[in-house]
Length: 269
Image 1 (spheres, rainbow, N blue to C red):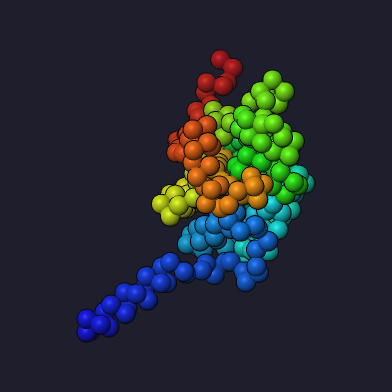
Image 2 (cartoon, rainbow, N blue to C red):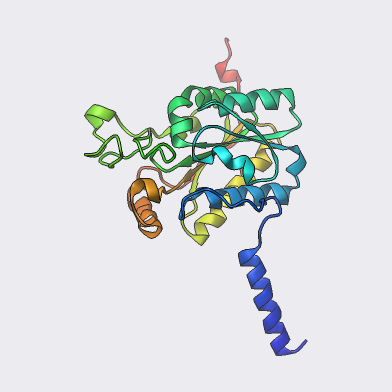
């Protein structure tokens, strides 16, 4: 092969690497705002399911929130859930069809507010599901109100002067709570604001799905994300703001990796 032909082949291979689209992603145009993190995470989930060869056995559960239409974008079986109830629905699906791979896809308002009980109890029981948690510190779909994860001093539609601890309480670090539960098998916090971060997030999501196949407990993946429309910033400024303000409170990395805790310590002696 000539030197020129070799260069052309390398360029084509590089383009395929950069622009390749998972066959599980549909041709439907996503409804998300420009700069939103949801589309990137959807792509990663589709790639992971495709690479693991589990399309036919995977069932996703999407509740109320920005990702309510996720079933339009990833070609797998889906079930809708009432606001906050995705872990409960996923529990029923997995217990009824234990051979299936079941995951939920939830935002911070859904998972950490109205769905706090469902989330914590599902993980505490060690349900063999994957939970994907998108944390952008605001209610994106309903107008930018304060979420449980909204930072102190952060301006939202319902905290126009910034979140005040005396009035609104502290931001809820629910992933840290989840990591302390005995039924949690793998708990990690990632982001998708850069190419390197995207690669790490994909590895984390893939690991969660692989561990879920072993039925060793709940796998929980938080993605610290942006909401540039809700934050009233450009996508670039949103990423910078997230790194500067959210990462100190929600640091990136694994919080737990080891499967369910031994049950003997919880038994009557």
